Every structure is written in structure tokens, then in C-alpha cells.
Image (cartoon, rainbow, N blue to C red; front, side, top):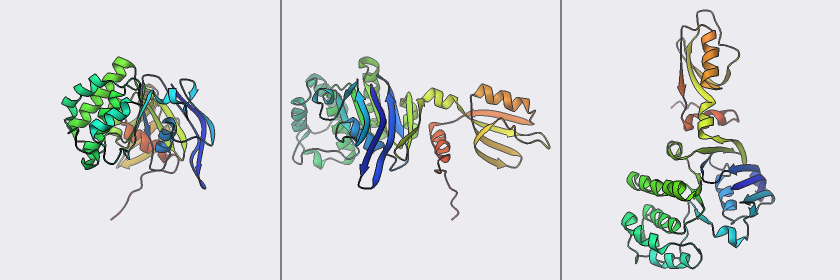
Length: 297
């Protein structure tokens, strides 16, 4: 659906994208995660057709996106920094988008009034940040997009509205096969909604997999080795900490593989635990000098 290979984008002397590649399957909810300045928002602007890459390939359904009106009509993009005409009300913006997007669904717009409950006559600039986000989602969902690009999408929304919006999005994924590419620092939330995840660092894709594969190939192991024994050398340890004799290891491998290695070492005790997406993010980036440091106050 969305396929980028070797994308490069420079701003003056800064390479915001440095050989960036990604493969977003059709109908997936793909979470794009990474530290600030990693290149996530820059890529989303390329996928929306706002930026043109300096080199590399970016295709949506096999077609280039930049200045391609037919492809752009299938895409809705909600950036972190929202745009609206300064005097425009919700109703004004609805009429504007209805004239641009051929699949804009007026009937759905009317039905979603019950969800968002915004005053259609008030200029959007007078809304709070959270209300402006609601306005953007109301309009975007009515465009009936095949691809929904989201940059920090639910920042500023209360928990009830966050859940409501994700429910609407996931319904479109299930019923219409909508493809969602979302960048967010809220990894706990992404873990609940995404089926694919890409970790970005330094303008490059560090790792991309289905979330189930990612969680199934990294394990937290707590182990007390038997007296006088070292840790099994077969373990590919990403991180290690100790509390007394108990060692907590972040280890690459499947639970079955790690359990077999740990058991064969005849430890006093061992236990395997699944990692959260946040833990995987921290320890994967720890391998590229992005480890979390201890700060002593």
C-alpha cells in the first residue's frame, strides 16, 4: 500500500531522512515510533504529498504521490499542527473539503454531530486545542479516505474522546479496509491499536515488524544462576540489571528458545515475562546509543 525505499530529504545541512524505507500493508494500523527528530513527521509529510524527496522512491498503490491528485484524493492527513482558514467555522470547512474530496460523505458528517457536539458556526480558531482536534477528525472521517495519516493524533483529547475516536477509526479499518499510519509518543496507546510497528532513528528505519512478531522475539528474563555459574553465553542480551543475585535480562529470541537455554543452565530460579512496546522501543534504541540514563538528583 505505502512503500518507500531509500528516501533522502535534506534541509540545508541536515538529513531529516537518510535512506528511509518502509512497507505499510493495506488495511493495517501501522505505528511509527522514534525519538524527537528521528524523521517521523518528515516522512508523513512525504506520504501526504507535501514534500518531495531528494532521492529514493515513495509509492502508494504503485504510484508516486507528489503532485498526483488522484492518489491524494484517497488520503486524509491530520498533522500535529492543524491548519484551518482563520475565519472558518466547522460548516465552512465541511463545504471546502466536500468540494475537494470526491467521496466526502455528507450523511456521515450529519451523524457524527452526535459524537463531536461542536458548534458548527463558531470559528475553529476559537476552539480549544482538543476541540480543534475533534474538528479535524470529524472532517477527516467524512472524507472516507483509503489512507489515514496521523501525527500525534489524540494529543489534547480527554480519555473518553480518545477512545471514541479510535473506535471510529478501527471500525473503518475493519469495515472499509482503511490503512492507518500513525506517529505517536504514546506507546501504550499504540500497543492497543497497532498491528505493525516501525522504529525510526536518525532518519532511518531501525526495525519494522508486526507487533506480535516484535513482542514474540524479545523477552524479559529474570534468573538466579546456580552458585558459581555465569549466565549462559548463548543469550543475546540487550540489557542487564541486578538486584542481589537476581538478574533481569532483556534478551533477543523467542520465549521457547530462551526458556530452553535458561533451563539447560540449571539456575536456582528463572521466569520469562513479555515486554511492552515501550520497553522494546527503549532497549532497541539502546543499541544505537539512545539508552535511558540514570539521573541522580
